[in-house]
Image 1: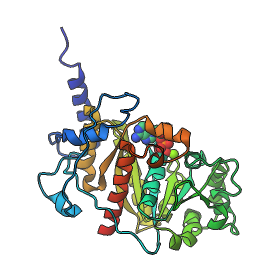
Image 2: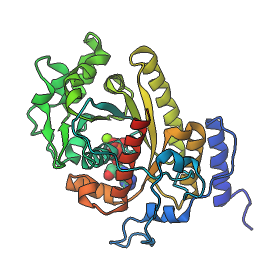
Image 3: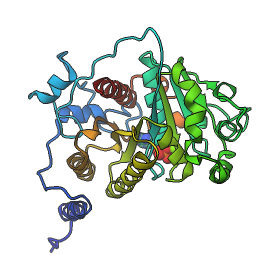
Length: 354
Ligand code: ADP
Ligand code: MG
């Protein structure tokens, strides 16, 4: 006979118990998720038949402003279990800048920081925003992900940080996406982490270096490395806001608590304007109870800091790494491209609401 302490129900109850210990939140029933939106989010690899999913589109029919929709009833529930607002197309810009500097930060690796930097940047550029992406990871994944060979770049972020005579213009390269530029990096940057330690005002070096670019761009997005070291502190000191991409899994919640502590320290000591722009659920699989539970607990703990948009897990993203381009151009009509375009509109709506 099967033991009642085993099986998926017992497993998720165990996870839930653990989550409650980690996050001091009141237990509430798991919000139900509108299956139409779930299908839309899961609607990925229909071509290669990876998933048996519906092709029924996720329809949003009315045009009311975000806040009215969010507060109103009758909206389909999004992946976070809250009513899914309709994010309006932003008005076109006739001039650019000053830039909002955003640090894409999570000390855990492989959570979608680089993927989000590339695809949020490309989606903002599609909406007519001028975007500068900064590769602040010595692994150079952002650089490679945009099809640039990190070993062939003339000057990199390392030179920008370490040489007073080096300016953004000396380092910047164009990407294949119109309106989106890149400050590339390679393994040289790992030396900067050590060399910066002896610099005067070592936490502000990146902020000073990026100053000159602020008037020319609407968004500067810094792709951080997976650590809370000096380079990441430089990113948090230079930034106006932080976006935290995180996988929908139990350990991710613990990591976020640690990151929030670091953000608070930077706010107190170095950068009082730093805000958490949002937590972004990545690699979301709406079919697993665990994913939905983690997302629900995240919303309980961080409330509207959690983006309404969540990015589904799909093999299309690793494929874009090989192609060296954003999903918005590689698979323009895919669910992944749809989600990042929606995220871009959500980010712009949040900025406008400030
Ligand atoms: P990080 O920068 O946080 O280390 P990456 O963006 O490099 O994370 O992502 C790690 C790996 O996961 C990459 O191979 C990437 O293609 C893949 N990946 C990112 N987002 C998704 C997703 N939504 N679904 C599936 N794979 C993803
Ligand atoms: Mg990365």
